[in-house]
Amino acid sequence: MTEPDLTIQTIRTQVFAGQQPGTSGLRKKVTVFQQPGYLENFVQSIFDSLQGCAGQMLVLGGDGRFHNRQAVQTILKMAAANGIGRVLVGQGGILSTPAVSCVIRKRQAFGGIILSASHNPGGADGDFGIKYNIGNGGPAPEKITEAIYARTQAISEYRISDAPDIDLDRLGACAVDGMAVEVIDPVADYAEQMSQLFDFDAIRKLFAGGFTMRFDAMSAVSGPYATAILERMLGAPRGSVMHGQPLEDFGGHHPDPNPAHAAELIDLMSGEQAPDFGAASDGDADRNMIVGQKLAVTPSDSLAILAANATVAPGYKNGIAGIARSMPTSCAADRVAEALGVPCFETPTGWKFFGNLLDAGKVTLCGEESYGTGSSHIREKDGLWAVLFWLNLLAASGKSVRELVQQHWARFGRNYYSRHDYEGIATERANALMDGLRAQLPAMKGQMLGSHRVELADDFHYADPVDGSVSSHQGVRIVFDDGARIVFRLSGTGTSGATLRVYFEKYEPDSSQHDLPTQQALADLVAIAEQIAGIAEHSGMARPSVIT
Ligand code: VG1
Ligand code: CO
Image 1 (cartoon, rainbow, N blue to C red):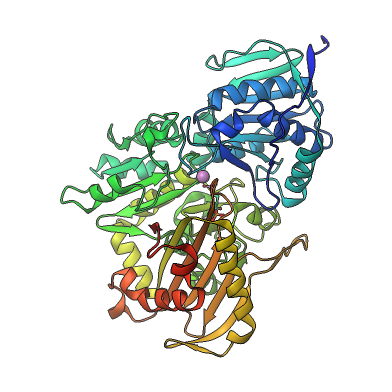
Image 2 (cartoon, rainbow, N blue to C red; image 1 turned 90 degrees about the horizontal axis):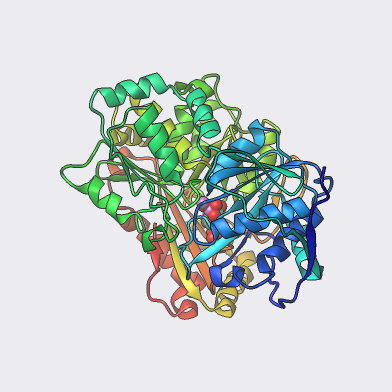
């Protein structure tokens, strides 16, 4: 083997914000990442923090946003100079987040590096991001992310080969100095896994019978996956996938699959010519939105409905071991778990908290209110997986999305649910709001707020049932004795100022009350949130910037 032709560079840039402890990746403006040494600082810190990575295999790819290709070339040269044995890189530098997780597991890689800022906007003025996933295919746990962060603060040099760029578009083997590189088809392993989990024959028959759908890839990375699987493997009519070409700036949009940002799909699904089924996915293809005719399914309901019907899919035919949901996600899944006689775990926000539960076999399905759903098949949430699960369910039941949702509510009751986001608040003001709330918590229990009595008011705290690790200050929650809840937390994924997220939930067992407009059903809770938190005063905003 030839000695790697490496250069040791001194880091001169002073702006090493690094990854904040507690978040699962570094997300910053592209212009920040373009500073000399910035990306390199983080990547070297990853290699420095991974014990035993020399000679090992890594998976590398991203969501195709602006700066993706350049970053891939840099990381390959750094991997070579740091003694990594082999890198599997997606063709064109492309791999969705779920595909990275799938490939790490299938090929038993040591870990992987994902380049994405997920649902954040892209382009030269947009956001970029990077995160490290471990050998189980999931986001690195806090122990590792904190070590990486600490290293970014201390590091003074990085190692990089001065070998030329590789041809990212040509499939097959090549090398960077002594390191083997394989450019892989980004879709193949993932598509094969999907065909094993779901009844592709039944879904093919559904489309052959005239069933219509639109999948909005939002000009992001799910496009090639959705086109290959839905149109080519399952026979959905050409054009079923819209915005299927990944663009560096996502066409100037937020690639965030919710009714606010996927408005074109929502309009289509509300019209007289609406297809039978609609869905959308985010920048890195791990989120999903499910839409029926004139009905957007809340992610919390989607999780509960999939859990209640999981056995229709071949991959889950023996039932599920348990469900996990993030704390702000509605309690709809808890009712299903109870009916199935399986446990339901409540975790802090962020997919990394599901990893241990999945590895230990305690849960099969996981979900977050933020349009994230997934299962034990990988260790990330998975947008297209959720869409295929719904297609399998629609095919097996012969029912419409609306019928499935209404039947679910009739059986389990409806959890009215909404999230209000206040974006771009000055960080001190947002912290003051949260501190003000925390100060009120001890006195709240037993109080009447409007017509609701407070049963529990706390700052959510989680002890991992598998490894005992503790995560505190995960959001203020006010739980009422009628099942209603209000949750307040600050976003950990924004790149400018603070974003306050307020989550509202109300449980309605009575079927005759299941057709109210959501915001109307939750209006009294919204007023209570304002009363106790002083949102308008702290944020300077009379109403939320985004309601989902
Ligand atoms: C948001 C969501 C959270 C999700 C995270 C990553 O975080 O609320 O549920 O896990 O994004 O999603 P925050 O801290 O901004 O509320 V994505 O699609 O980046 O992987
Ligand atoms: Co995402």
